[in-house]
Amino acid sequence: MNVTSIDWAIIAAFFVISLLIGLYTSKKAGSSAKEFFLSGRNMPWWLLGVSMVATTFSADTPNLVTDIVRKNGVAGNWVWWAFLLTGMLTVFVYAKLWRRSEVTTDLEFYELRYSGKGAAFLRAFRAIYLGVFFNVVIMATVSLAAIKIGGVMLGLEPYETLLIASVVTVIYSSLGGLKGVLLTDFFQFFIAMIGAFGAAYYILDLPQIGSLNNLLTHENVAGKLNFLPDFSDPNAYIPLFLMPIAIQWWATWYPGAEPGGGGYIAQRMLSAKDEKNAIGATLFFNIAHYAIRPWPWILIALASLIVFPNVSDISAAFPNIPVDKLGDDLAYSAMLTFLPTGLIGIVLASLIAAVMSTLSTHLNWGSSYIVNDFYLRFLKPEASDKELVAVGRISTVVLMAMSAVLALALSSALDAFEILLQIGAGTGLIFILRWFWWRINAYTEISAMAISFVVAIFFSVINPKVNWIIIPENQEYLKLLYSVSITTFGWLLVTFITAPEKDEVLLSFYRKVTPAAFGWKKVLDRYPEERQVIGQLPKEIGLMMIGSAMVYAALFSTGFFIYGNMLGGIIAGIIAIVGGIIIFRSWKNLS
Image (tube, rainbow, N blue to C red):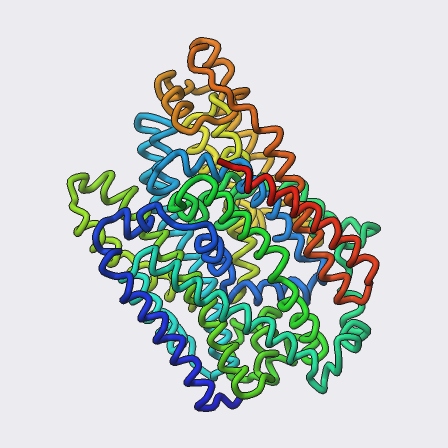
C-alpha cells in the first residue's frame, strides 16, 4: 500500500487540529472536577448527540460488522441492531430521569437510590469494576482494531500502532476534559463519515467488484443479503434474531447500550442543558447509529467476500500479520488498501478519528468513576478541585497504558463482544426496573453482578472442561438463555428475602426524579401526600415503539434502495417519515 506525502499531510493536519482543541479547552477544563467531567452541565443536544455517535463509531465497529456479515450475512447484524430498543427506551423514558437526578456520574446514583453499606459497596466496587476492568477491555478491543488497521494499511508493528494512537489521545483527553472530548468528537465524526462513505463508493467501482449490481449478484454474496435470517432453520433465526430481539436487548448489560441508560451515554445526558436536550441528544444518537452508518460497512464487508473469500486469502495478501490477529474482521482493513492517494489519507484519518474518539470518551468516563466515585468518595473527601483534576489526568494515562497491554493479547473484536454480553447477562432488567419498582435494593444489584459473573465464568471456562451442561456446537445461544434465567431468578430471590430500602431513602429518590408512580404504590399508600401526577409512562413506551419502527424503517429503506427494490424502499421510507414527524413533534412540545 502506497501512502504518499499528501496522505500523511492529511493525517498530520488531523492530529494537529485534535491537539489544538485539547489545548483550547484545557484551561476551563482544569478549573473544577465538574467542568472536567461534565462541561458545566450546559451542553446542547446536537453536540452531545454527535459525540455519542462518534464514540460508538470506533475502529473496531466496522471490523465487528465485517466479521458478522462474512460469517452470518446482513441478518447477523441483529445481534447489535436489537439494541435500538434499549436506546429508544433510554430516549423516551430514562433521559429525563437521569438529568433530573443531577448526579455527577451514573454510579453516584447508587447512593441516591439506595443507602448504607450496600450502596457504598456498589459505588466503590463498580467504580473499579467498570471504570477500570470493563473500560480497559472495551478500549483494548478498540486498540486491537487500530493494531489490525496499522498492520494491514501501514505495515506497522502492534506496539508502534498503539504508541501513535494513544499518545495524542491521552494528551487532548487529559488536557481538555469532557468538553475537549466533545469538541474533538464533533470534528472527528465528520471525518469518520466522509471516510466510510468515500471508501464504500470507491470499493464498489474496483475492477474486482465492477459495480453494485455485480456485487449483489456475485455467488459469494447473493446468499448473504437477507435482512432477516432463514426462519426454516432454528440454528439461524434463534441466535441471530429471536434471542437478540426477545431477550438480549433488555436482559444484558453492554457499554453504550445499557438498559435504562448508563456509562458514557449517561455522562452526556447528565451534562446536557436540560431534559429536552438530554432527550434530543440520545434521539439523534440512535438515529445516526442504527439508520445512517451501517450500510458503508456492510457493503465493504460484502465486497471483501469477493476479493478475500477466506481468511487464508487475507493471510496470503498480508503475510506480516501475526497469526493470532488473523480473522474475518481483518477483511475491512484489507479492502481499504485498494484506495487511491488522497482518499487513503482521508480514510486513515477517519479510522484514526474513530479510534481516538472512542478511546478519549472511555478515558474521560473511566477516569470520572475513579475520581468521583472512588477517590473523592472513599479515599479523600476533602480533596480540592485542583487535586481531583490532577488525579483524573493521571488515571487517564494509566487506563490507556493498561488497555494497550491487553490489546496485544486479544485476537478478535467479536470474541470480546460476546464475552462482555455473557458477563452482563441477566442484569439488564434491574437497570430498567430500579427507577420504577420500590422493592429493588442494593443487594439486588450486588447479587445480580456476582451471579452473572460466576455464571459467565462457568460457561466460558469450567463447563467446556467438565461438560455438566451439554451445549451443542450450533446452539451456543443457550449459554445466554441459561445465564439470563439463572441470574434473573437469583436476584429476584435475593430481592424478596432481603429488607427493602428505608422509606425516607425511597421517598427522597421519588421526590428527586419523579418517576411514574405505579411501581411505588406500596410506599405512596403509606404517604399519600407524596404522590405526584406523573402519568406519562404509557405514552413514553408508545413513543419508544414508534421511534424504533422509524429507525428500522429508515435502515431497511436504504437497504431496499441499494438492493434495487424501489417499492420496498418507498414503503419503508414513508413509514420512517411518518414516524419521524410524530417523534419530532413530541420532542418539540417538551417544555
